[in-house]
Image (cartoon, rainbow, N blue to C red):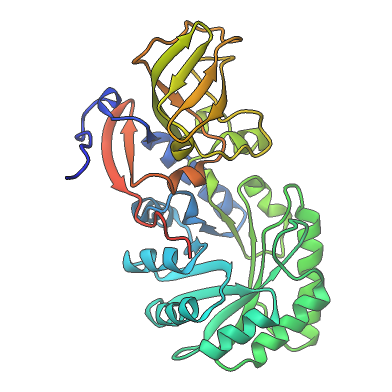
Length: 361
């Protein structure tokens, strides 16, 4: 039996909680703001769809001017290829025969598919599995983010040469996910590597930079040809702390209900770790409740959120009260729900399936 969903035109008070609710006007404004900035600076923009995992939202981003999309895993890219997207970058080292076989089928289906590599092991696997048209590969570079990526311009050049020499592959450029505030390091790394690639006789058509926290500083990396960002489309508490958005840019809230008031200074909500995510991202609590300034979500179990009301300066909520929560990390929330409810001024406009939910390999 299908879950009962609110009808278009229903008030949010009819929504069964917990449920992410997306403000249509804020969503559209976030998409337009980012695209206008990229257009003004002559940068291609490639939204990372792991934030929403919804083809209809990606279609809004492409309609606004985005030049293709960024996926994180093969199965995620398959969902968006099925939806008609034909310019996809997968920013992940893809290993293992099952994944590689699926990747090569996808490469033949999609007009422009790119992947990344930061080791000769990854390159060898891609080459051994290659069939049909050549697979475009970017070298992933660590420019300060401290995650994946080759560590030096020399290593990037050597790996680019290995890709160019590998059967079935085409070296197509560089990719990085830098540290926040790392524009100067990214630019220096790209410039050094590009010079070395020129000396080696290799073209480097794509230089892909990324991240929502530095989205509006993308122009500080003039050697980049494109910028990738995901969280900007909804925004969250972490992005607000980073200064990339304000309270009026929060397009996603988690709608929750007070299910218990066991003490005068404690409320319990129906949105636990299965709805809010346990990601702290450096915060001491699990989200903001705008209607209850000073209140703190101090702990999560699977189905409950415990709210400390000690410092709350608003009228305290009663059992049955609906509340909206700004999550710490919106991207994880998207992978926790089958559907999202969209609204305008508190009236439901559409209910969309999270089509790539669980597409994590």
